[in-house]
Length: 197
Image (cartoon, rainbow, N blue to C red; front, side, top):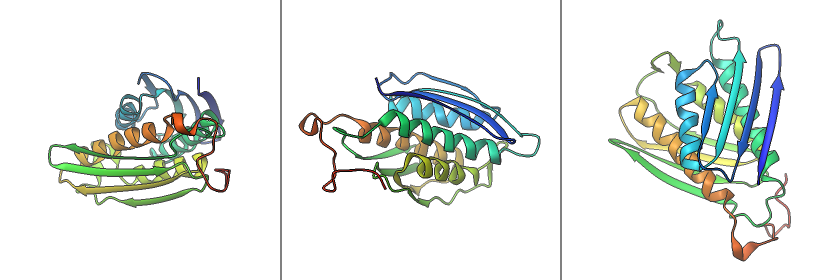
């Protein structure tokens, strides 16, 4: 089983992420940021990743440190769980609609961090959640999972729908990239022979 648990403690946040890349989509989230919990549940369910995220952060200031650091810790746990990447598909992509909204997410478990993020939210906040923090979450993830991620919200005028399609598509793209490819068993999916930086 491709599993990992990572704990990250700073003066701003204390976070533990446990995941199983070969799970059934069970999620457990206690972060103090309800809308982020809802979005991470999309990753778990659509990625078929068992995901447990426990976080205590300086929410009396705002949610920035908590959201960013959860992205960092999730990226660290993912990198630990995926291992040497031999025998996986490496690339994943998904288009996901929700009513009027449509998003596309493409990921490469390349060993090189990079984020292209094209999302114009129609509102600055969803409830109490600042939508700018989503890019911080994904930056944290790519920098510590060592992956390249392209996120495009192609259309949508309901910001909740925009966000939800992004996270559902992210989960599905991640699932595809992590899947074992029987024809690549024991082989690193790269002409370089490695998927590190």
